[in-house]
Image 1: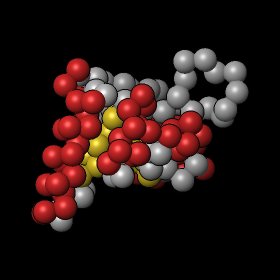
Image 2 (image 1 turned 45 degrees about the horizontal axis):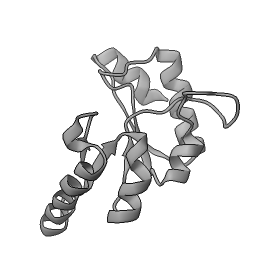
Image 3 (image 1 turned 180 degrees about the vertical axis):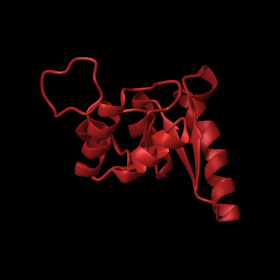
Image 4 (image 1 turned 90 degrees about the vertical axis):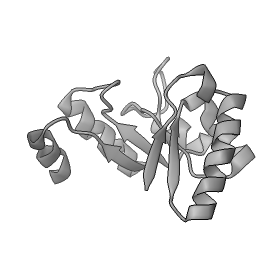
Length: 129
């Protein structure tokens, strides 16, 4: 599986994301290689609806629905159509204790995940969870 991070570039946001991922979908179908985009939360629903492909979130917070303005709940991501999440990317690092809480929430909500560690010790620790 290839996880394709669309970051926050203009060229991979909104309608541009649809155009780009239409090509990615075609390549995936032609080659049999699973390519899953990790996209901004604002694009998840649209991509899922228009292209019908698996979509992951670039980040989520370990919260429950409620009084959490500005946070990304696993519930909302799942409702939007996300099937997975990237946790602890180098451009959005979180403390180790938050990695564990976020991983637990992702599992609780049935979201596939990739947890990123930046050295062998981190990888061993995260893998034990």
